[in-house]
Length: 218
Length: 218
Picture 1 (cartoon, each protein chain N blue to C red):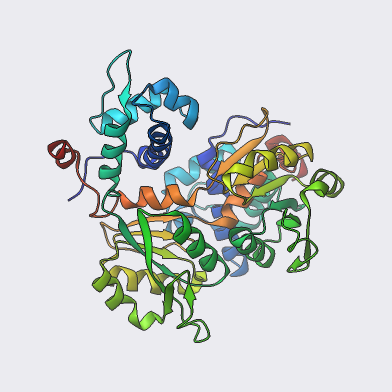
Picture 2 (picture 1 turned 180 degrees about the horizontal axis):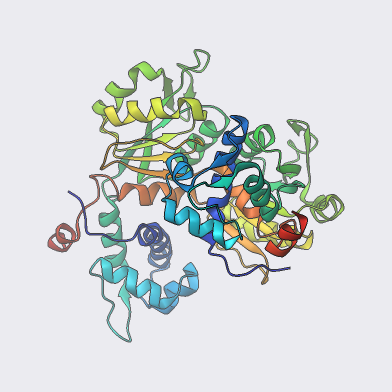
């Protein structure tokens, strides 16, 4: 069940719209304009109208979007209305933080299983979820119907974890390991590499040298 | 000292090139082709040639790029050759993990200061860096020459932290709080929102419903 070619960047904006729509709903605002959505999200009104049109959501001109309807629609399109189960691999510092963070805040994407190879961690819990050995990964993911995998292990172990997750039925992976994963077609990988983020940020500071300066230095 | 309008997406790829170039250097490979860079990075050879041309790095046709020269050039352009100092605000679960992760792996972007409002944390250390109160933030950042700020506090406190970091001289912020920061022109903000990442990932799973299904359900 693959969907039309909607740009990944637009998909990334949907949860932002969802969050803002939920805020409007909580404030009992029944109708919201693209200008109001723009003000809260930081995206342009044109961008917002274009994104929402991909999903067949057309606001009434001069009036706006039905807050409840649009929120429900985005939630369904993302598959969040029924909840999506996730598994975390790696309960080190980063994994531990991710698990606590996710388990306290996410209701629609729930971490239902955590795996780590460290015998000292196996059997302990993070917010009620028991840490299990990787040997149980495939079976647990299949049994629980896990769709999303989160990889927070060292780069050298990332591919093996991805292989297990995919064997367990995972369709999308959030990868924090600084490694390029090889996955079969149909499996989506989103990489978050903190080293890359910090290093690229340096470009926007005065530590960065211009091309001219670099050329002169050579 | 602002640089020409190079797309942010290209900047994001530079540290990836740098990492792969360092691997080639470590393996004592003096010259590398765009095809070899493509194989290791997952980007297309055309993309790579285009990105590197932004920075005046033109490979010799049919030969390739000088590994050491290109690596040094990218490092300088990113401002990493002399090291860039960063400050972390928020030593909760996420902040703690980020600090440990960054302090053990990054030599070119170094966290030199950590701040948290929790009296129980102030005075304790993460890998040799003492946690200080926010009241010292501006002064410490100025004294140390901190250029990058990392925000890992709850959304409600994020703006106040950003204001302090900017007053302290920070020019680029990596923001993990689910909040839209208002910053003066010239300050770059990169948001990493784990909720958004997980929610948008759900779209790529079979939990997601097609537009047709959503329309029928309404």
